[in-house]
Length: 564
Image (tube, rainbow, N blue to C red):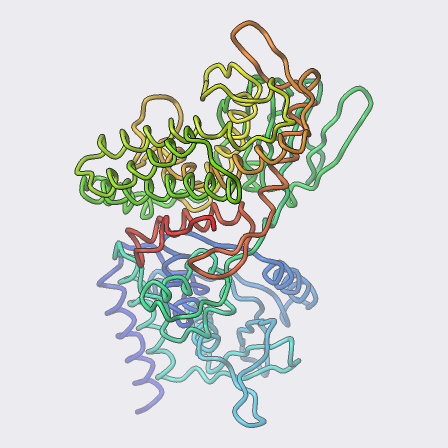
């Protein structure tokens, strides 16, 4: 075939593809790279718009910028390219002129593919480079026969021949990308599990956990981060003012000034009436840092909600939770998990001692509610049994306190809004802290917190947040709080403000409670289902991602974990 005929065939092939989908937005060339690597990765990034930038990504961006700015015009420069005919858009790292021919250059931080001693481009890199060559052809109106890929780790540049076969692969990839973009369901995880080990979206995809759900004998590799990446800034004094200075958040009061780089923060929690400027709020929103407000009495007031809000994820959530039978099964599983955790904690905390008859009676009540929940045929029946178990649980809690604990710290049942004793003031304050942790994680996952399956929307509190909280009230806060009371860590006079009919925490009490809560969140815990260790804070996010898999991936792992 002559060069002219080949060019005509390429143009006709391109027209055919574009004619079918001319109304659709273009595909990013970078997305073709993800598609060639893993279709699930493409879908998460391009359809659900989930993109996580880790240290390697930031280092790669810095290196790209250095190389882009290092050349002279006509030799090395980056270039934005777009073609409606091809249905592609992208920014090539560099364009170089060699012997009168312009050549696109793609820069990779890793190593080249080795076939013996000869370096070559990885298939996904070759596809991306060829797409840039085809875009450059249309931009310049001239034939581009090759593209280059530079691998920084090897310090080698590989030549990619942009032949008819590779051009056709680009067109087929564009069409496949469009097909995936139209479908509402995620593609399956990659069959080659080794691809997942280096994928930045593994903590979102949870491929190892999905394989475990399909095969109980599978031993998952922990790809989910074990601990929090950023820090939580707690502002407990009304006198503090939060403002922005460059890329930092400044907290100041009466001549005292503290500076926190915004990119190191995960959330800001304000207790009471500290002021925050609009500039500081906007900087937090742009950086994905959520801001939460808690009243002086410990009630969760609201938040600046940030995070991925994918339409597809929320539509799947809405469709799934619109099914009454599906909601009932989730509610039963959640209630059983909560009640079993309460029962195990009471049994563990009283192991080795003679249990009073009243405590034994409460334990039997809780066991009976488990049987009722398992047989329940309606959400109201599940909620009724769970409520009965909760009453028995709080009636049993006083039996966990040591004799030396002062009577002022002992609870007299469960009281809320307002708390009527010191223990309930601490309990409610900790639950408010847990609420913001769960809400933040739900927004990170990209779910709609107003769409739950167990709690009914009777207040401003988000039902889904209240649902997920049920799994973590005991392990995250109840156990830590009872332990701190038995260690006599609370001052009944200075840590509380007591008025007729109401008790809340003083500033010193809030500081102690926050420190206790944060320490507990960062404690490592071996998940009994996935069999790897992670902090309780990361366990919250993991559980929410496992919940999402109930309707978008592989079900059966949500609410399976229990304390030992």
